[in-house]
Amino acid sequence: MTLAIILAVLAVLVIWIIGVQNRLVKSDELCNNALKQINVQQISRFDALKALIKLTREYASYEADTLEKIVKERKIVSSPNPTAADINANEEALAAIGAKLIAVAEAYPDLKASANYQQTMKDIKDYEENVRLSRMTFNDTVTRFNQQVRVFPTSLVAGILGFAKRDYLADDVSKKDYPEI
Image 1 (cartoon, rainbow, N blue to C red):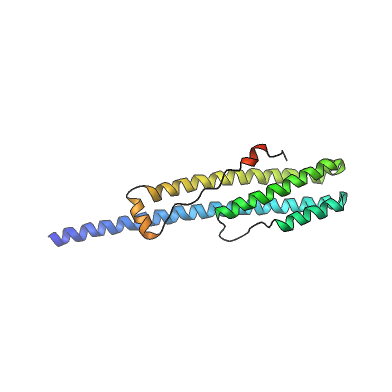
Image 2: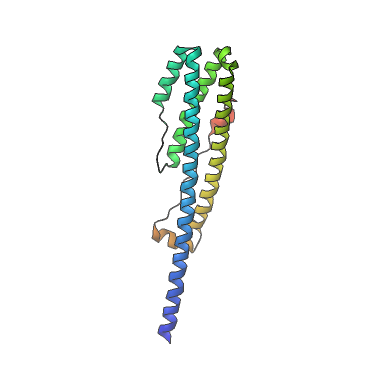
């Protein structure tokens, strides 16, 4: 009888541990997916910026050459498994390129008035908004994951199975004063 009780308790414990592990894996995968979504949006925004540089060449080839040098210096990380640090580095690079493009447009009113320029800037603004929303989604997903990893008794299983607290994406303080695109 005692053996049966011990086996029943062990069976319940094993089933509980399997359930906790499955929940943690699902939450971890949601975090990975959210991070990849941000990366996809950043790459799309980067492609739109490169299209804008190409358009700039029609108006001022010297300025386009300068912008292309900036783009080459600031590589956008595209990886199957981006990290929060990769995403933050991409944001810094994209902000520098965007700021330079805005300055060029201010210097060339014909470029700024171009319908292609205006459409591309609208696209960039849309990507910017998508990245902002994706960042919020990621941080919310990480919050839920981190709560699971840190709450007792799940924290015991998480530690044993190698699940650790994940990093949030950093707040970009410079975005508060970021020029309107």
